[in-house]
Image (cartoon, rainbow, N blue to C red):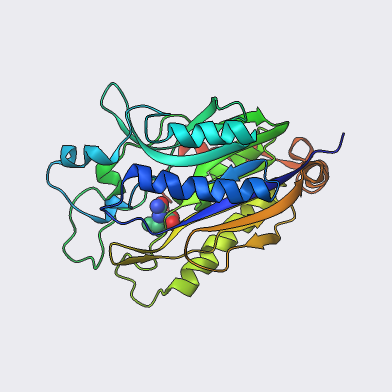
Length: 309
Ligand code: CDV
């Protein structure tokens, strides 16, 4: 049986501070309705889909931001989304901020199967930014203040007959993360992101360069691991701050096969033939034949670059 499926990316336009979870979930459900009409069987939402990207704001006592976190999933606000997906027999994935019973904060995503069950939970591994207020910066990016580094490692699950794995935003720039999934035979990598168009002191780095690096990372990761990838933005203007859009679906050859046109709520779709992943995995990227792990020891034993010459 060929394994073809229409996959969707549900880009979400900016979410303002004052917006409630219920309002956001209503927007997500509208996109899910549209996806169902277009025959989508698996739908990808962004990182931190339910809230504004609050790490741009500083608070002295981080507990003052606990209201951005979910203590259970599904919960009252998201249950209608889970119910709708179950009605449509659609799998989906989305990101949210997780506060565990033990008081730990993670930037998390889940994969939900067509029966409404959470079959994978991933916690973001690569947290960008900084933990303290930095007065010299034009924009703060305080992910290291509000989240712990993820402790799940890189996970895959067989869902809807496809081997799926999650990355979250900054993870997409790290080839090690992709390879961890590739080494588990991944066929669909989903990535939600919130990428500010400007958030550091490198003023000359405009949004075009940032979008280029985003596409480069996703296309390279897909090609080098012979997997489909769906990367979906929360984009547009949030609380006066711009985040680029550029949601894309990429095939196992590294080509973009669907792409968002605007910066608001928008659905992109593509038919994915998951049997196409086998070609790269059995030729150029036949890991069993060609990899040289015995030469890669620095990758797991050394963190920073060490210049010794
Ligand atoms: N949410 C993110 O992880 N954003 C980063 C920005 C800060 C560069 C990203 O890699 O897109």
